[in-house]
Image (cartoon, rainbow, N blue to C red; front, side, top):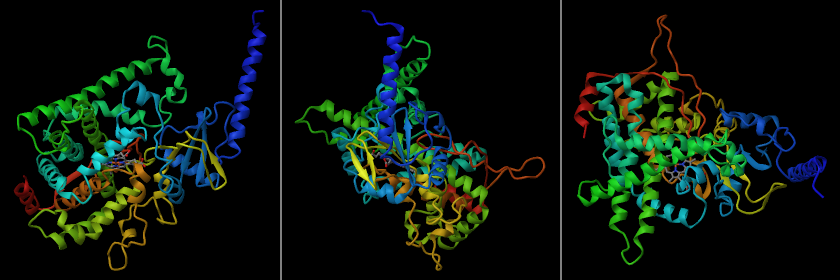
Length: 511
Ligand code: HEM
């Protein structure tokens, strides 16, 4: 007998009621969360901007450092405290180190090879090992000269076109990354590889946020054909996939041919190509090198530029901090040379500025999400395998107990009464760079780039806000874009050499 319309409605309602019943059962053992709607859960409340601040507010309202969000039946757990992040993501890292599968990013855009997004398995392990061998924290010689080179070129470029200083600063982490990955010397303007990789990365950063695309919430949508109305995301993904392939293959092939011609600097690609094991299949080895090299710009550039921009924004809002930093640099380094890494030990205030930059507006306010690999229980809660955990680094770094008056930029909070680094104060780096086995593999390089940029810029320039027609300062708004790495909205600043001597020192130091 054929089914009637009423039969279909009854079956459908039964299924829906069953799904909702199961969701409610699951929720009983989960952390508190904002009020949810049947079936779709919290989907309509999911914030689309400043997520980290909304999650922190929800945590306070619910009086819990761990909150649960139901995204149409999928569990998202936000961790607002460092202790819980340590308990789960560090101490139980053997089961909390996977990444969520995001159909838009992984399947449709083809970024499944990207180490920071990769599944916790053999491919990730091989890439991470390779990365650590090349950039071991003790092996500073591999990156310090490159960092010095790009920072000094930046200073000289700012002397030439001070009005472009903010845009020019992007070349510091971008140039260091392309140099470490492929041995390319990045052009001062319109570098073709920077363009290639930027075109590929912009959409990937967006798609890396869980729930940014509906297909991440309803994975079956990935099977909807491209011509169906509303499937525009598939056309976008196809175009973005081409960008990704062009960057990954194009940069690697160029590095390889330059190596063959002997026309390259030492880099991860060149060193790995020289160490190829000819007794084994070559193609899989090439694939690993290609992935690891492609990873470097992706992980290093947008995150580190965010921190550099935050440094500029902080100097505009807090000129007293800038003056104190300059006074320290003047007394330790003087006026006849630029800072270098040997000065790090003797400039605690600059180190404190670096720490406060990483804390005040963290470059990755929600770090990168982790995915639980097997069922687990914690503090009376039960989590199912597949639950996605978002470490709300912003909330941890704005915790009033560790950092009183957290919205204020105050490097002094990291110093003791003798103006030395106070090790009793929680170091922001233990949160700002993520957790457990997936912790940022390049954090020492990131800190080196940002430290040298702060020290070099402040020893040479004053940074002040532009002035409007009525004589008022135009200060940047403290509004940050959403994305895996978050950066301030466009702003302007005036960079003025501190003296004639400062100009001569910059010109003399250019390498
Ligand atoms: C201020 C700058 C930076 C910040 C804030 C930052 C932050 C992060 C965070 C939060 C993660 C994810 C950690 C987790 O899953 O818990 C990560 C992963 C990673 N970062 Fe960074 N990062 C920065 C710069 C860099 C640089 C300069 C490099 C390389 C030269 C780098 C290489 C990586 C790599 C390879 C991963 C993937 C680790 C994995 O999944 O195993 N990062 N970073």
